[in-house]
Image (cartoon, rainbow, N blue to C red; front, side, top):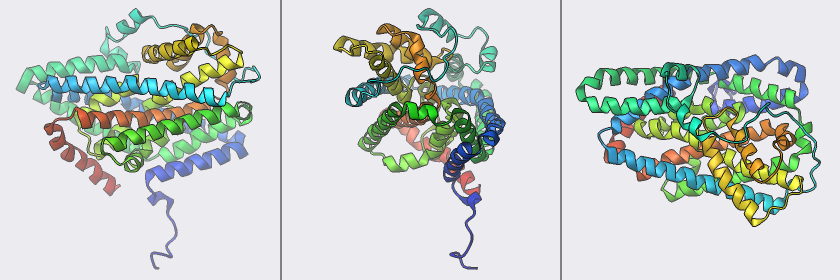
Length: 424
């Protein structure tokens, strides 16, 4: 049989294409057979829990190793911190300005019918206790913090542990070798789990559309459309940044398509972290840059979510008839910037950030219930963009804060991943 006559085998398609097919099929099945689709939820839940199972070991091993490898080059660590957090805050402001600009252009909230479409968590906080926020970053029991899936305390301990190992010299080598083996094993498990991603994506999307339906989306269609337009603009900005630093935007996008699709379908940045790390390694980014920048980005750099915060607040302000004066817009800009960082270690952090901004401009927190019904559909897009934005952060650090040692170390780090991907 000629190659042209061979039947198509979906199992030989790239994993990203299989996931897109699962997403499309899940949407179709969810809308056509809602009762059947609702029963699929355990498949998606099992996948998400399996990924979460390895997140903390991956964060601990990669951050510790990254800090250890830079421990004797504190100037390099300082450059990484400056580039990393500098980009985080610039990207935050740009994201907010895009959200404010789109609202000023389209006014999706003008004349909106104020009907609650969903529920908000009971006793939702409307401020961040900054003292408690910083205290929570210092784990009194690091094992308990890890068991509770708390990323920021794990980050803090990993940084300190990595610096301590770097100060021990040769004595630390057995521990470093053990952590490196743990990291490699976690990435191996990641590949096993993600091989089932198309089925999980199908189940999650089918359940989502069967349980949420399109009625609430239709009611708030203008907000949803403007939100996704804003996300597209944000991706275009990311492409321009990548092009400016000598990267090929389309090639980078194609390389990280798996974690982006995974983030879109699961609505969880945390779930994409191990897959995202592996893809960046395959692209030749040194482990010590990935291990430091990416976990920090997942905690503090959520560009898609931040743009949504600004757009959601201005939407609700116009829906309630609150005039968006210059001082009100400045308040939204400043409070959103602060709230987006301060809510990183808070339960329901995104809602807390929006609630803080609403309170700052004199709107009731209950206004969140108006858009809560479509939040799942908005969350899909903004999570995917969060993943892409952190890729840009890693690439910027690699471009402006990397050393010659990083460039030399990149090729061997990437080789095993590419080889194993070819075997798969």
